[in-house]
Structures are given as structure tokens and as C-alpha cells.
Amino acid sequence: MNPPLAPWLQQQLRSLLAQRGHALLLSGPSGLGQYDLALALARAWLCEQPTPDGACGACGSCHAIDVRTHADLCVLMPETLSLELGWPLDEGAQKEIDDKKRKASKLIRVEAAREAVGFTQFTRSRGRTKVILVHPAERMNIESANTLLKTLEEPVGEVRFVLATEAAHQLLPTIRSRCQTHAMVWPTEADALDWLVQQSPEGSTAASRDQAGVWLQAAGGRPDDALAWAATGLQGAAWAQLPQALARGDWGTLAGWPPAQQLAVLQKLCHDLMARAAGAPARFFPTEQLPPAPRWGALAQWSRELMSAARSVEHPYNAGLMQEAWAARTRQVLGSGAGRGA
Image (cartoon, rainbow, N blue to C red; front, side, top):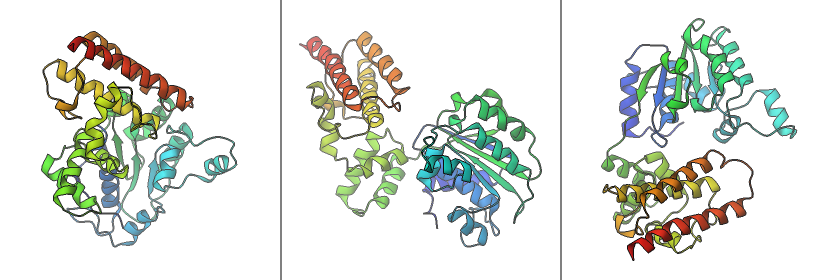
């Protein structure tokens, strides 16, 4: 049984179930629940006793989705994410990975897209429709997207698509044009905090609500990302003091974090310093804890460097050397702000 949807996702689910159309594109930045909403839609479309609020959760179809065996549901996602979320790979791909002939792909492979096209051509197993769920859709390369395009435009029989993305601009325009786009709704701060407290084992104490506020700020108001911060055990004092620590060259808090997470923190800090330099409020860190903002040109250059690093952060570089380079560059940039303030 899947946990209940967050209230703002449940509201969107009810609205989307009332709409017609064979292809939905759930679009928005990370952390807003695209995957959860996409799966809830698939469950409702395949449910044997659906309600206006979604799937019943008790029928054979719902159980088959829970145990990842529903014959009328095709989940198209990168192999790394499939393994993480418990969705089975086809036997050939699984054997290649088990035999260490190759690593699990971080992209949606064209072979998987071809299998999805073949999936639409088989007779339905148990219900009124078949569903293809694609997440995250931006992980389709050009070959994968073009393979799926014709079927997305003119599906065979009763087939419905739900695509979830955190970067709609990276999708082929032809993919976007064949879907009804739904912009993910941001929850209010109060709703997000209530939900985060409910997910926390500490219960609904004042202290846990304050801590949830730290996670939500670190995530820029995105609840799923905030929950990921909660899983790291991030404490409020450590987060608030991080900008000043990085300005001193103290990398201790970040040292054990994955490179992608380290880089995300630097991008958040750069964003807040640029916002402060422009007279706007900070988004991720307490404003009073930010070091003096460097000159705009230095910040803009640093931002471009961080964006460039993000494009290759998943490559197998030497993590230690990469971390040393980031730490030195961060101290250099933030140090220029201190000199300016003096």
C-alpha cells in the first residue's frame, strides 16, 4: 500500500482525473511530487473501482501495482532509478547489469522506448486501458524520444500516457506539443510544514516544526526535496552557519556529502548572494548569515562555473580533488566579497 498523497497532490489528482485526453505532462521544478502524482494517476486509470479521488487501493489492480507486476502498466525510466524504486527491468537488461557487462543507465535507453512501443500493441490484460508512465521524461535522449513520438501521437487502442518532468525545456517540442501540460502546484508554507512534521518520527512538536522550517528553506520551498534533507539529519544551526564556514574555507559540513549535493549547496549560496546583491531576499539561507556579497561580475562568473560543473557532476572524477577545487574556488570568490566590505 502506497502512503497517502500530500494534500496539495491529492487536490491536483482529483482535478486531473476529471479531465480527458490520452497524454498528460506533469511539469515543474524538482521536489514538487511529479512522480507520486504520476503514479497516482496511473493507479486510478487502471483501478477496478476508481473514485473521483483516485484508486480504491484494495482491488487486484491496485495490489498488482503495489508489487510492481501490473501487466497493463509500463514504467519507462532510467535503469538506475528503476532499481532504486523497485521497478523490474527486462530480463536482458537485468542480466547484462548482473553480469557486469555494463552499468545501469542513467538515461532512458532507446531499447526501453522500443519495448514501450511494443507494449502498446498487446491486448489489455485486465482493465479498460493500458498506461505508460515516463519519469523523468527529460532523461529520454533524442533517439528514445523519437521512438516514442509516433505512439504518443497516435496510440494503438486504449493507451494513456503520463510523463513527469523536472525540466520541460529539455524535452523535444514535438513531445510537449502532443501532451496536455499540467504545471505542478506549489504548496503553501503552512501546508508543507504540516506535511513535513507528519513525516518526521519526532511528531508534531514545536521543535520539529522549527526543524522542518530549516529543511524547507534549504530546499527552496520544495517539500519532497525538504524531506530528502530531513533524511540527511541536517540541523538548523549547521545549515545557518554554512555560508560563513565556506567563506573561511571550512568544508567540514559538506565533506561527507555526495558531489551532486555539495554542488547544489554552492549553487544555492551563489543564488542567495546574487539575490542579496540585487536587493532581493535570500531564498535558501538566513540573510543575516550570508557573507558580504562579492562583485556582480565575480558572482556571475562563479554561477557559470557551477552550471558547467553540474553538467558533468555524475562523471567518475576523483571526488577528493574535485572537492578541493570547489572549496578553494568558493573561498576565493567569497573572500573577494570580504575584501570589498572592508
